[in-house]
Image (cartoon, rainbow, N blue to C red; front, side, top):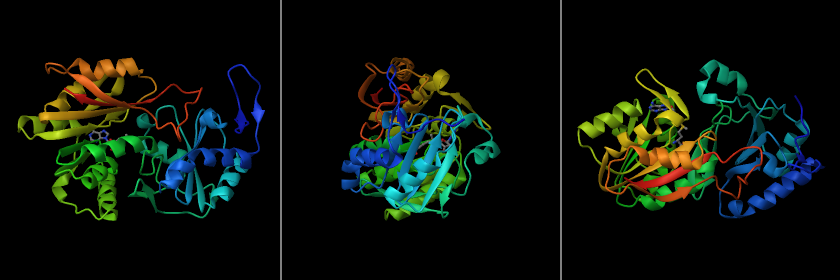
Length: 334
Ligand SMILES: C[S@@+](CC[C@H](N)C(=O)[O-])C[C@H]1O[C@@H](n2cnc3c(N)ncnc32)[C@H](O)[C@@H]1O
C-alpha cells in the first residue's frame, strides 16, 4: 500500500501537499536546537505530526533509518530528499509490525534488511547525544542501538547518578548504564538476557572512556536476578526498569499491561534506604493513569509516590494525531 507520505492531514481538513525537500527542511529547522547542542542522533520525522503519516525517520549521524508502520511502502522521493539534505551515506528501511516483541528473530530480520534502501552499507557509526557517544548498527534488526525517545530520561539518570549504586534492568546496549557511570554513580550493574547486546554495551562504555568490569554486565533474566539480589540483601540506590511490552524467556513471562505492578514491587526489594525506582513503559495500549496505578499498586511503603514523570521529548517527537502517547516514565519513591 502506498500513501502520500508527505501530505499533512488533519482530522477534518483536506490533505496539504508539501514537496519532500521542503518537508525535510521544515523538520530540520524544528530540530536545530538539538544539533546546536551537539546531538547527532534524533528523530527527524515523526508520523503525521511532521507530515508523514505512518512513517518515522531517525537520524543517526550520517545514517538515516526509516520506520514504516501500518503496511506503508517506502517512498523513494522522500528518502532521497532526506538523504540529500543531510548528506547521509545510507538510508535503511524497517517495516514495523504491530507487536515486534512477539515475532521470531527470523521474522524480525525479514522486516529489517541488513542492507540500506539507498546508499552504501554502514556497519557501524558512532553518534553523540548530549556529549555521550553511542555505537549504532543501522543494519541490525528493528532496533539499532539507541532508543531516541529516552534522551531526556538518560540526561535525568546522569543527573541522578552521583554517589548512587545503580541497577540497570533490561539494559540492552547499556545506554542508561553509560549515562549513570558518566554521571558519577559509585557502581552500575547492567542486566540483560542477550549476550550480544551486553557486549555492545561494553563497547559503549569503552567509547566513553569508562572501564568495564565483567561483574557489571550480567547475562540473565531480570526476574531471576531481582529475586536473587533481594534474597541476598544486595541493595541499590536507583533501580532502572525499562522492559519491552512483552517478554518470554526460559524462566519468565512478562506482559506490561498485566505484570507491571509485580515487577515494580520485585525491583523495590533491591533498594537500600532512600532508594528510588525509575519505571518505564513503552506501550500506547497502557494509558498514563493505568501506568501510574500499576507502578504504585503493589508497593508496601508508607507513602509510595511518583516524584517525576517523562514522556516523548517534544522537540523531535511532536505529538502525532494517529498515535496515542506511548512513552511513560516515572521516578518513584516506594
Ligand atoms: C526495550 S529494550 C530495553 C531498552 C534499554 N533499557 C535502553 O535504554 O536502551 C528490552 C531489552 O530487554 C531485554 N530483555 C527482555 N526480557 C528480558 C528478561 N526477562 N530479562 C533480561 N532482559 C530481558 C532484551 O534482550 C532487550 O535488550
